[in-house]
Image (cartoon, rainbow, N blue to C red; front, side, top):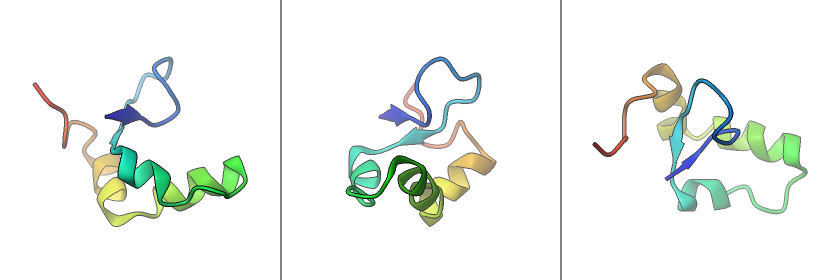
Length: 54
């Protein structure tokens, strides 16, 4: 899993490689915006522990 905005941020939201690649080709700010609009990713922002492997 990747984490939104890298490991230096206090809140890490898991995102799959497939989800990260969906908006490829967009400018970086638009890529982040499009990634944040994926319904599954939006749910993880509500509960950042969702999808984490223990």
